[in-house]
Image 1: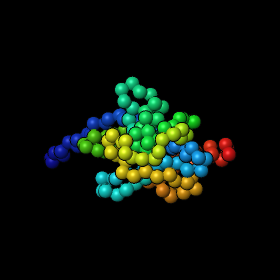
Image 2: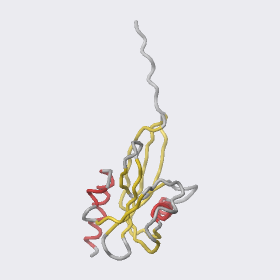
Image 3: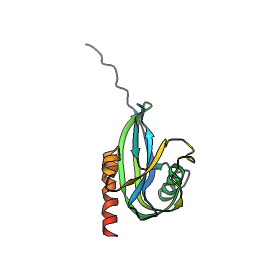
Image 4: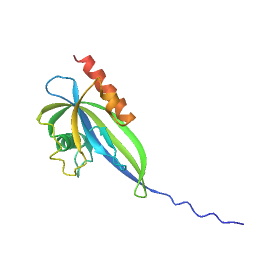
Length: 155
């Protein structure tokens, strides 16, 4: 009888992030996206987001992370939804929950200069008409449809 080696089970880690789609203050129906490098050094465009710090709420984390990664001061208009997924990294199975918000720019200038972790390598305004073709991840494209619907209802 041949013994099979035991399959190692990855340890599951829970992570929470928050961020949002920030509408430009000028009424142009554009949102701010950040560019990040993938593990294979490919540039992908996504929504600014990050982890809450300490006892910070997901709303406060979203506002802070957007400010750090884009330079924009904003307020939350409405929650858009939550994305939930799993992935492997560093020998761990990570279960990630990401809270997305629709936000409005109150001030600031679009820049990556204040990103403390230097995760964002670029930043740009993207028209809602073009956003589906720019966002790297399908789950964020689904959230973007909620932004488009909100804008259409509130024109």
